[in-house]
Image (cartoon, rainbow, N blue to C red; front, side, top):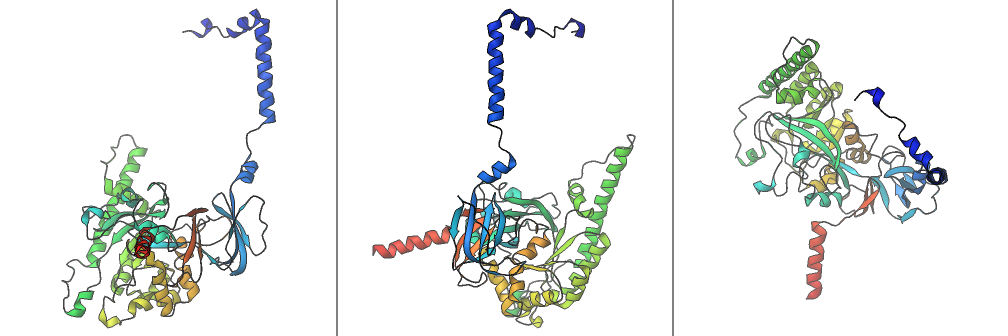
Length: 457
């Protein structure tokens, strides 16, 4: 249709034919404008005023990054800490939670776990923490995470509010995810979906079984050969990106065929996505430090059972370390029975940033006790607490969001009746993103069941 044949004023004749109709429409328009000016849409300030406000009052506050407040209040608005201190004003209408006699801590972060990926380790159908094959950078832990795992509420009830969930198996296991331990779906739990790539290097040459004379066979592949293989894989990813970039600039060049492994390794080789290297022996740690520096990638070390032997080199490289489970025996007898417990102490004293992990699903609830073991062997208590709160947040780049009690951070708070790292301490309340979450779990369910059985006798 040509524009010159279009009638652009069809409405006007209709209105002029009926004056009553025109008057009615004018009145209707006036009422509409009046309603707009009389009842405006809520402004940001009005929304904030009407937001649900919670005040935790009378608690001893341990911010972790600042001085302890012997008796103070924490104001929560829109899921974040609005204010805290000894003398803050509580707005009228706020929901007040009396916390006299309790201690407020930031919720703990498990730096390496299989929460939601492993239910019963002995039943293969309930274990989904690994993919087939050796090179799987495309695998994301979040895709297999079960939000309804029974281990999640158990860990949460012990003051753990977030966890790094990792895939395992092969050389490049996939991408870990940082999740909060509350949500109706796995996606709702996500804090950071692609947190770090997981690369598993050979374990120590000797195992716990050797103490009883049942040593396992030596690894067939050395860390040196594995790192050479990784160099080739990373080089292939870089060449893949160069060919794609060249094809984008020159239409005469054909782009390379899609290479899944190379594609998902691009953030790693570009230095955008960190890599968690599972590395253990001192010589392997040194080789991996050299590899990281040559490849110019961001690295985090996990395990590092013999890190105490090369603590200075780790510090100089600026690589943070995630301590593995302290429930194991030393992998090398010559290191001494207390090697695993002294390891985080020596690393911390050397200036290496450390964090603790459960390295588990079923015992993820025991995260604070790993830190406590190290404290018993000389780690300063305040450093042990930081290693399950602010240090993991800093290591994974979410310290502006969580890890300490500060205005502006998410209100993920634990109220306890004693030291958070002590076995006898009872967790009274847990808040995640400002919402008080249930502490009910399989343990409390069984406790009530057997208490009722005793009462019925």
